[in-house]
Length: 133
Image (cartoon, rainbow, N blue to C red):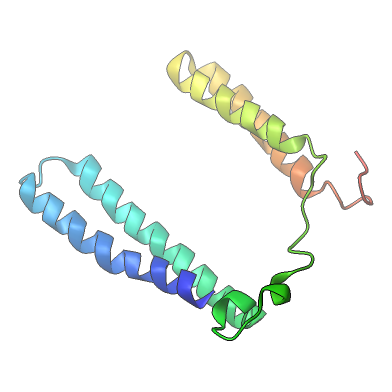
């Protein structure tokens, strides 16, 4: 994860000066673009820091070494929920939230409540045993 953390970490040193340059080019009158570019730089920094901390905790992967063989990366890559319906429910909740922004605020509250239910269901899906719904 060394390469990934460096790529995202260098994004901070790219996006922050770009936002300042963008501010000068627009005479500091277009604040949405300036703030958006600054937020992208902050997000790149957070992702780079997370990948850096995770890389120190996990150690070297085969992708990080120059002398690694292909077979070293074989095997289980993580735990996934292939039969989970909660991502679909969360997607519907997000769609309801965006619909609420466009049509009526009352729909936004329904989407927010559905999103909380979907997140709790997705997080605690395996806490009662494998594939218990």
